[in-house]
Image 1 (tube, rainbow, N blue to C red):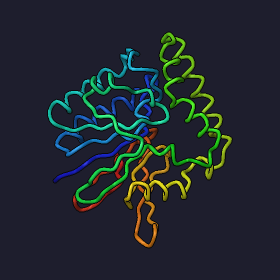
Image 2: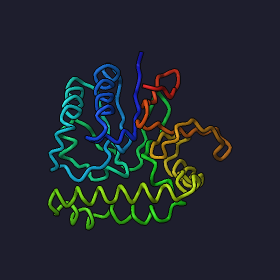
Image 3: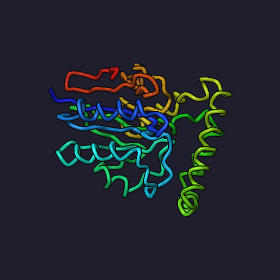
Image 4: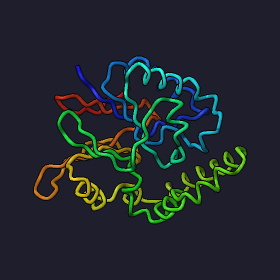
Length: 239
């Protein structure tokens, strides 16, 4: 049966070997034969540049490259932890990098794909940070620093982000409904798939008098999950 797979927020890291192995099994056992695999951001706990050797990821990137070479289209959207993923990474694993907002035809239904962090507009502190680190100037300066310095800075930013998130309400760290509606209108669609919030769910609502749907992907801190889409519909599933 035709199927397209969507995952996000795996946060792969050398300190979480179980998730690395879990994802390797997913790629070798579940992904082959699919029409496409979409990774909607935060595949990694953090990414400090394509020049980082990151040997703990060799197995994963090798499997992705093999799947791509065998005919599985793999797509990658930048998350808030791996926004520095570049063309060298894409070539290494054989994937295609997506824009922040990408519309795809999913078995006859136009669907908007995003990581989702740009929708959290109530979190003004994060949005200010996001605007800064997405500039060419900031990224060029960061990538020019030695690897050791970049690792230390990434660890510090991760700790600061975790502390900041714990101090904020669920409303602030979730997507803003108005931002969701604006994104759907801007792209002329009524279905959105995203990650980032770690709150997997299917939200049905009305947009300008028409049914609309927002699907939030699960993270992989626990058992992990995937959104499986077929011509018959969509379903969130545990791995």
